[in-house]
Image (cartoon, rainbow, N blue to C red; front, side, top):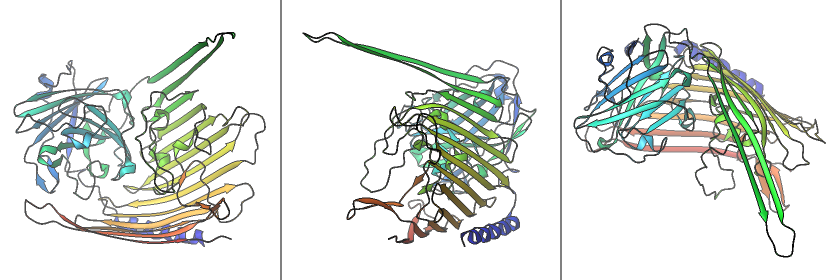
Length: 545
């Protein structure tokens, strides 16, 4: 039954998608040439080099919020050029005041809450993944990984890398100058067309501007609305790109107590992380005995529910191209969640011994991810765990995709390892999105395998969404069965505590989720919009004796 549902929904979406495909917006109307500079560029936030004056300019920025479809009152000019090492970006933000809204001077914090400007790059120009680099008037930087369309899961600001920026402020403008190393980017060295957009937060005027217009119902980071960056020649290859980050730490202590022999103890630890560019678009991450001490702490949350909290991944080893693995499923049910790696069943941390991770584009339509990580046991006598994950995303039409993933969590390493202690997951998804993002549809099936379990092992969902400025809504049908396990995933509501029997029992569930949102857009300056939101949720819990 479940396979028939999945195949029927897949065929329907395939037929609708083939009929509805058109060219992505802005690809023909918003194009910017990039040329090589043969002269030295001083990164000072001034743009006084002659080459900046001779470079094509992106102008006529559009207001996106609170209204779209009109030119921005305070305009912005953007230029790009390059040499053998850097992609240079120069942006002039015209303004009527030197008083800017700056919420924070810490890197990567509160970017969208203050005045700032950013460039969006889609080196494959396939609207599936890209990069964002932003700077505020004080020169504070932020960078993020993007995964195509709108939504929280497609924006990851925990990614960090090396690039440079300077900013200056004048009475009628503020200027940003960036230098982004090609070694920071992943791209096809033969491609002469990249996806491109520029964003500007004009917070003190309560406005958000874009170069290539994005409708107000979508995020400004939506790569489906990017224009084109046209290279005069293919961009220079990144060349040898190997980054090594070793660490050594040790400690020694001695206790002095009267009448007793002095007690001393010491410990020593060492490890290394490596990032190796196999090609300009394919990256290999390696780690041996990492301690992740450089990772920012999580934002504190208070959990008053019976469900686990979802903390974002911050460890650098897992970040690049993380959407290849992490975006399978829906937020309440993810078959892969990398924060599970390095945690025991009770949530206490366990050491990661080593890991390897190969991710990136094989060509303009196919992205792959292969990851294998070995951890120690929860105690010195427990066997370790091995986590193998293989994922692939193949783009079809313009913004749609077929995706597959296989996950194997296997007890491995150490004495007493049980080869029957495993959980395996197979995930298949078809995701349709029209060229302008108005229509979306999905049909997915996920299956888990465990020794001794032969039934009720699936999870699937199918649905569609429609998005316009005045109306948006979706219908999503979800089924999670009793014996669907995701040891490397995040699944809510399946495990339930039975107080009468003092035990945890597993109960699958069905959900029909139908949120609708009507937005009225008055043509008056003092009122931006009126929102009417209605959410219908049908949920049932399957019983089990």
